[in-house]
Length: 297
Image (cartoon, one colour):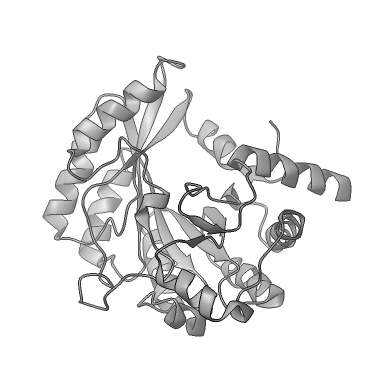
């Protein structure tokens, strides 16, 4: 499907002459705002069950998770290659030598052609970035930073444990080493109205990033934010599908056309989700966005 914006699949097609699939890896990391070094309890919205596939479990080795992931995908495209996506929690939060051992364990698989590393902007020391720069010379490498909001008051409220300035610094240090850099943002966080959300687009538009991943705010049962919603629902705006589509369209219009839009929504297991209950898969939502955008062009 052709998109009126730069799509992540098209981005990968421009790099690889073959089909490429991401495989999520849970390498057993934690976060500095979980283990007490910056805070406890984690981000108020966080429940990693919402994005970890069954084959990605931290009691399994990186190699085992890759093998099971490849077995899951390869039946349809036997010649496909893979990117190991270190996804769960903070995947740069350990000693550099331990991190590199896990990264290279993935890269040593003959069908793995690159890495995507999801992390926090306050957990990328120069020593690690120097080592990752070497990897980027021989393999595809994208570091995806959980920025979530460009407003420091929001970041404090959701217990992120870092500032937006930390994110800007990490992004600039990463890109200076020739490494692809992505950002993750949550649209609809508490006390953020439409104009505040669109201001995030204006700010990140000034940064040298490659990819943008947008997610609607999902309230997951058992999280601190779910409790906050039940106590103070007035601090949250519940977006209907069409309203959120319009927000996404206005958001991406403020971004450079060179930015790759990786996704607009995330999907959490229905049994964990408090709101919103749209009942749409990612591709179904993206198709709606495309149709709406085409009508307005």
